[in-house]
Image 1 (cartoon, rainbow, N blue to C red):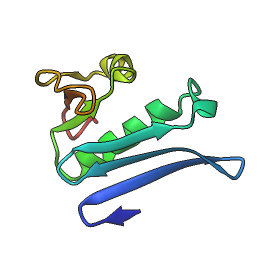
Image 2 (cartoon, helix red, strand yellow):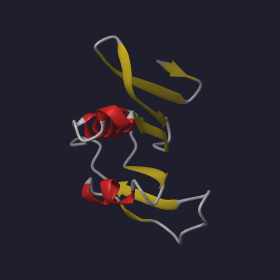
Image 3 (cartoon, helix red, strand yellow):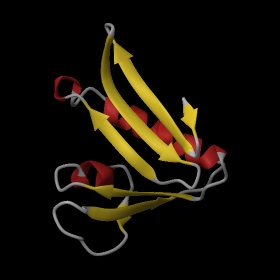
Length: 104
């Protein structure tokens, strides 16, 4: 689904929503959530890759996001790096992943 500068992806399995992600046309990942029941099944990685591919298809050369403390290791393992100082518990950790749009 695409809505005013934002694309939303939904992962569904056995007629239930397992995860959801959103990315803007500028490459900002605003949402990546996976149900606790579906963690460690590859859904987070698949959604993240799909969001990055959407951003790349729009000509973006990077994706940016704000990570929680819990998700930070996941993003590091997916090629993201810190992109600024930690901004408090509710603001999270700014992170960035640069990529070549042709290969993302």
